Length: 398
Picture 1 (cartoon, rainbow, N blue to C red):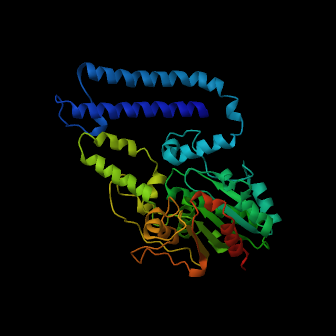
Picture 2: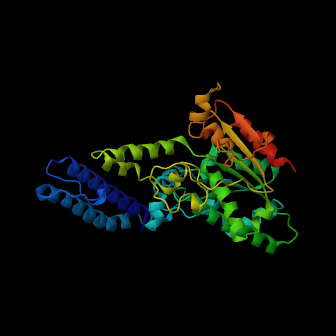
Picture 3: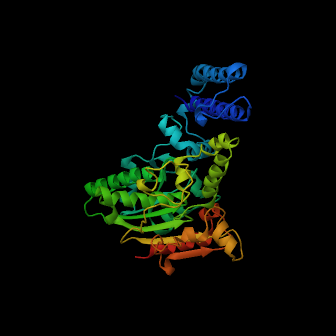
């Protein structure tokens, strides 16, 4: 299935789902109806019901029929590298619907891979880069709805700058940010283990030194990878030296928490309840950002969109790894509102610094391992020159 076919299939799914929602509302509002069915199965009767049934049937028929010409048209397009704008669109789509895409085995679902200069690195090229850097490897891990190319902000790229200034091999993790953080963490751990095993096989005397610079959700994925490595008995944590978090929502992000509030409020009202399904198209990855889930037990055995308090398992920072936190606010002035509610526009200051009212959840970043900035937004974390100076300084420390 090509990208265009996949996009078409997604559109068909969206139209059918919207039809279900509208009919469900019609069913609830109609004085002739009684709400006796589950929202997903609420149907109208008579001529009205026939209209809705026809819409579903026609949508499915058109969707299946148009797949054939789209396949012919897009055959050559599927062989080409996506332009940066196209890659950004696919990455955003994965962030919002990535679990759905993966479940349907859509070619739009991004598989996890290491990249450099926008191209996938095979194992041979990766080993060559590590060898040339004498074992110093820095892995750049992007955030929600983003990709490896978006580390390039104007003329600056943290990874490339570190490669130039410190001689590190800079590689970029690319992944489906709509999947659960824990799923991405487990896959990331396996990939890191493969690096260590092959590097040691290539040259046992090589002093492998792994650092990670992670933006936003990428920090949760990196912490999850370390957790899984310990469970799986992986060796790569022995070579893990530095972990730098840039605006990581260690204890959640207000926007996703607001989404869960909206779910609850819409579900309370019988007529508005069908609309809550619109808020529930958001991915498992986004849902993990409500509280900062990083392990399976944080989300298993509970309904994903149920309104609930923070029930995570407390998880400390990686042992024997130098961990650093960069946190900013979009305001130039300090105030409780800008720090605790707004933060960098997406992540509050305390969440980025790992602070929590429950001390068992607080992450112990030494004061010298914290960098706090003002008048810097979440995206500007990728381009701010002072932040880069801090990153370079931390990675240069032996």
